[in-house]
Image 1 (tube, helix red, strand yellow):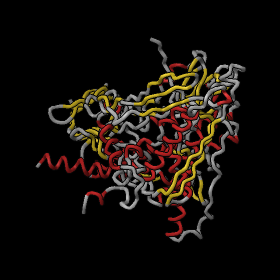
Image 2 (spheres, chains in turn green, yellow):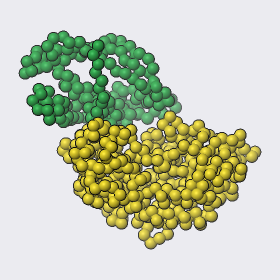
Image 3 (cartoon, rainbow over the protein chains, first blue to last red):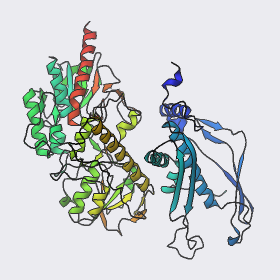
Image 4 (cartoon, each protein chain N blue to C red):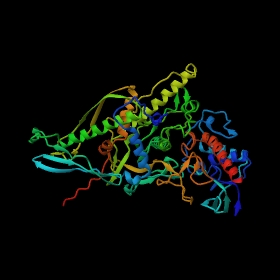
Amino acid sequence: MTQTDTQTTPANVDNGVNVEALLGAREALDAAPEAAQFKWRTSCEWVNGTHSRSTVSGFFGLGEEQARSKDFTIESDHPEVFAAEDHAATPVEIVLSGLASCLTAGVAAVAQHRGIQLHSVKATLEGDMDLQGILGIDDDVRNGFGNIRVNFTVDADASEDEIKALVAQSQKRSAVFDIVTNPTNVFVTVN
Amino acid sequence: MKTTTTVIIGAGQAGLAFSKRLADRSIDHVLIERGEVANSWRTERWDSLRLLTPNWESRLPGYAYDGDDPDGYMDMAEVVQFMQGYADTTGAPVQTNTTVKSVHPADVGYVVATDHGEWHCPTVVLATGACNIATVPKVAADLPSAIKSITPMQYRNPQQLQDGGVMVVGASATGVQLAREIQRSGRQVTLSVGEHVRLPRLYRGRDIKWWMDVTGLMNMSYTEVDDIKRARGLPSLQLVGTPERSTLDLNALREDGVRIVGRLAGLHDGKAQFSGALGNLCALADLKMNRLLDSIDNWATANGIDGEVEPARRFAATQLDPEPTLGLDLTTAGIKTVLWATGYRPDYSWLNVPVLDRKGRIRHDGGVVDAPGMYVMGLPFLRRRKSSFIDGVGDDARDLVNHLCSRLHRQAA
C-alpha cells in the first residue's frame, strides 16, 4: 500500500487543489500559531481623475517576508456616467470580484477535500447601491452595498444538497465573505 | 495526609459512574464533592430546565430510570433524585461539602489539597464537568452601563429580569430555551444567532435521541470522526425537553415573535452590529439536519422498520426576514438586559499540573490526560459522541478504569 492510498481524497478527483498540502499546513499552523499570522498588502497610486493603479507584491507570513515571482497590478476607474473615463472596473466591482474569487476558490478546495469532481463553477454577483449615500444627498443612506446577491451554477459529480453544502461551507471559511459581512476596524493615517 | 488509590473530583454522573466501575474492580477511592451529589444540577440551573434527553436514556452502570414515563424529560428535582439514588445504591464514597483547592504533582502521583485536608493518590480523575463557567465574549465589555448583563449561570426565571426587551446572544440549547421562556414572559426577545445545530424533537414519531441512539451515532468513537477537534467544539443541540415534546428551532421562536438576528459582531456607542452571514449559518444547519434525517431514513429502510414508524418527511427551511437586521441601537430598541448564552467552559484554576493547551483546554487522548495517572471525564466527545450525556459516562468510565487498572498493574509488576 502506498501512502496515497490512505489519503481522504479519491485519486480520480482532480480540481487542481492540493488538499494534502492545505491539510498539512493546517496541522503545522495549529502547532505554531505565530506562523499563522499573515499580513496582506497593496499599494495604490493615483493616475488621473478617478483612475488609479494598485500594485500587489510581497506579503508577510510563516514568520517572514514572502516574495512573489512577479508584481500584479489592478487598475480601477469609474464609468462614463460618473463623468470618468472608464479605464477599468470600479472599486466596488473589484470588491465583488474579490468575494466571487474567494468563494469560488473555496468551492474548489472543499470539493477536492470531499472527493467531489467539479466540471464547471460560475458565480454571478450583484450588489445594490443607493448613490444618495456616496453623493451626500441623504445621510441615512449608507455608502456601501445594501444587499449583495451571489448566485452559483455548479456542474459537479454530486447531488443538489451536496453542491449546496459545498457553497455553504465555502462561505463559512471565506475571508472576503467574513470581511463584507462583519465590521472591521480600519485605521487610516497620513504622512 | 490521607492516601487512596484514586481521587475522583466531582460527584456528578461522570464521577459516580467512574466510582462504580472502580468499586466493581475493588479499587479503593474517594469522591470529593464541593457541595452535595449532583451539585451543578442542584445549584447552577434555571428553574424550568429539563434534561434534553428522554428518561429512558438516563442509564448509568447498574442503574437506570424505571419510572412510568420513559419518553418524558426529567426536571432538575428529578435529576437530583435520580443521581442521589445512584450514589446511595452504589454506596459511592462521597466526601461532600469539600472543595478542592489544588491538585499538584507529588514525587509519585498527585496531592489533592482540599479545605478538609489533603489526599495523596497515584491516580486522579477530573470529573468536574464541562460547564463550570459561563463564557462571555470580549464584546460584552462595550455594553452600555445602563443595560444589565447576565449569564445563564445567574439566570433562574424571567421574573428576575427588568421589564423591557432582552437580547439573548447564542442559539444553542441554552439560548433557544431561554429565548422562548423570556419571550413568553412578555419581554420582546432579540436572538443573536451564530453557528447552531438544528434538530426536530420528534422524527417519524420517535424522539430524535432515540434515532441517534439506535443508529449508532451517539456511540461513535472519537477515533472514527474526521475532525475530532471540530466535533468536540460543536455547539449543543437546539433541543428542549417539554411535556409537549415540541421542536424548538428558529422557526418556532420566530412564530413566538422572537426577532432573529445574526451573530453579534460588534458593539459601538451602544449600537450592536450583527453579522450578515446569518443566512448561510441557517443554510448550513438545515443541510446538516437533512443529512442526519437522510441517514436515519436509510437506517430505517435497511433495518426494515419503515412500516413501524411514521413516513419520512422534511421540515421547512429556516425562515428569516428578507433583510435581517444588521445594526440595532440597544437603548432605542428598548433592550434592558443582555443574556450571554455563549457557551460554557470548565474551571481548572485549581489544577496545578501543566496539562492545558494555549486555549485552556485539557490535553487528553480519549480521557487519558497528558500527565501520568490523570484522567478526565464528561467532556464533549471525550471518547464517544455521548460522552457529555448521562448515558455516555458509563462506557467511558469502563474504558478509562481499564486503562487505570493496567497502569496500576504495570507499576506493581
